[in-house]
Amino acid sequence: MKKLLLLFTCFVFAGSLAFGGGIVTNSNQSAYWVRSIVRDASTGIDAVYFNPAGLALLNDGFHFSLNSQTIFQSKDVTNNYPFLSTTPKKYKGEIKVPVFPSIYAAYKKNKITVSFGFNPIGGGGGAEYKEGLPSFETQISNLVPMLQSQLTSLNTALTAGYGGFDPGFNNVSDYRADIYFKGTSVFFGYQLGLTYEITDIFSAYVGARLVTAKNTYEGHIKDIEIYAAPNTPPAPLYDIPAGWYVPGDYLTEVSGATGVPPGALTTAIASVNSMTADTEVDVEEKGTGFAPILGFNISPSDKLNIGLKYEFKTKMDLKTTVKDDKGAGMFMDDSTVHSDIPAMFSLGVFYKIMPKLSATVGFHYYFDKSANYGKTLDLTGEEVDNDEVIDNNYIEIGLGLEYSITEKLMVSAGYLFAKPGVTTDYQSDMSYALSSNTVGFGFGFKVNEKIMANLGAAYTKYNEEDKTQVDFMTGQSYTNTFFKSNLIFGVGLDFSF
Image (cartoon, rainbow, N blue to C red; front, side, top):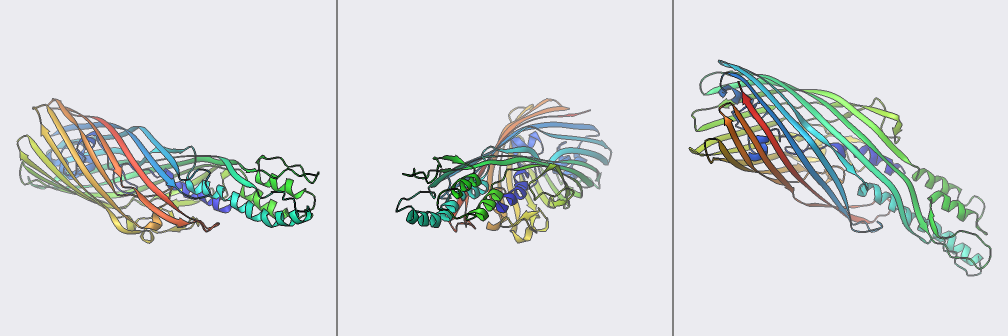
């Protein structure tokens, strides 16, 4: 089943996980972010990632931030293909990330700050599909109408030869299969840079990030069977009881019935055996990439701070390793796949509205069109550039508020709207991008002047989207309905000495 095997190639995208930020980029990079959602004008230690030029406003000395998040993501696709055993059917993908670390360090002396950051800049978890996805099951479900059609003419001819008795060989009514897939993806970023205080108002940053990437894919489609219920003959014309059959075995049984010409089903048997052969995947992809980062900070007063950052595109070419020849005939050992991280620009404006209340507005722009995600169209297995499936670049706009309840206790909340610019051709049950709304809430507690703890939770609801298409084999139209949600819990500790 060539179409089915091609789906393994597209399963690559099921492992491309992103939890906050662009289509493939994670921006949920500190517990402070989880509780406030917008940190683009940060002058704290998490500015290593969000606003590295703002590190010039740190006090002289060493500064560290240790953060971890626990993330739960659901990825649901509902499909109403008419030949599914149950329609419409919801397919659930569950992603769990117990530990999502972000670590930052900086040393400031006079006008110069040296900083280091480590975080999962992309991916960071694993997706498990215990019942597969619509694209897998719809192709298996096509065995039912296909065998019904193939056997109808034979059935008609035999009915005449059997004196009007209908053998019912085309009474194929159901299917079943063992479908399982699991994909993991993590892109670790190692960032190093230098911040320089130009004046009391202006500071600049230059740095770079090294990214190491690893994707793994494990899964199988096996034990494909159909349910057939031929009519019981009044004479010993054949002995084919109703029950579950391997499709090729069922056709072999039918070929032995009285009146079936020798070799009449030989081609059909070979074709069905090829289509329904067990298929396994055990593949790993690894690679590295590099991206320069520039930043600029403007701090005209204690009440106002403006942070700007530009990250260049990280060109990622991942090398494929197929284990034990389990490549499904489509993953090629030592081949290369594209998995770029797009360039991005961020702008943040912090303003202290009153002594105890402050606000930050953030804007993010991801240059998706000029990156290459290794995207394929129509399950052909042929890659296309992003500009063929993306009309507009990805944008995010957010607002964060923080209020000091006491000198030591702060409460914060934030909101982020995100809108991708993908076309309908981009969307599939294995790779889809949806507009979303994120809210976050939490607390910060200053143990003393040098230690602060952050605790927060954030929830992202993605806007449901439909895509209607036509199955290439049957000509039947169907609709996929895509939906996602994220739940994040974050805890962090910032300290200096």
